[in-house]
Image (tube, rainbow, N blue to C red; front, side, top):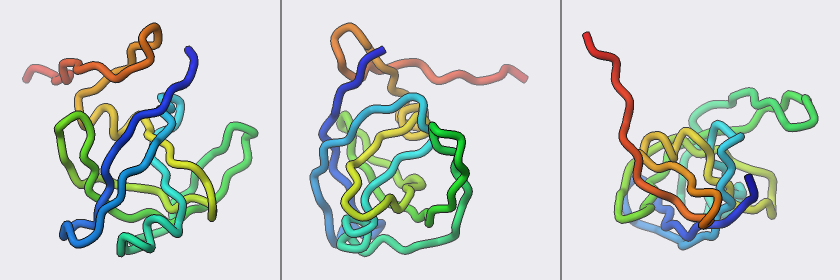
Length: 120
């Protein structure tokens, strides 16, 4: 599909500290990741550890927390993974779905999509 990056604003839940980051869009990753030093700088609290399977099939545990994310004029609080020191930012599928955003692989950009609901 190809890869591309997007600019997003990340902040703590109280809007005290924020930072603009370039994040690689990765629809194959379930969660979004930021380097632990970035999340610590923003004051994001570590809430629990969760297991994650890597592309090489290893399973590792990372801390997770909650941050605010401003993307495509939309802002929501969602789960974020504390990545390895110095790692780049990753925008995963969960945040894309929560924001009703999809990927246009030809133009390498995010596009608005409809959410899916089950009728009951």
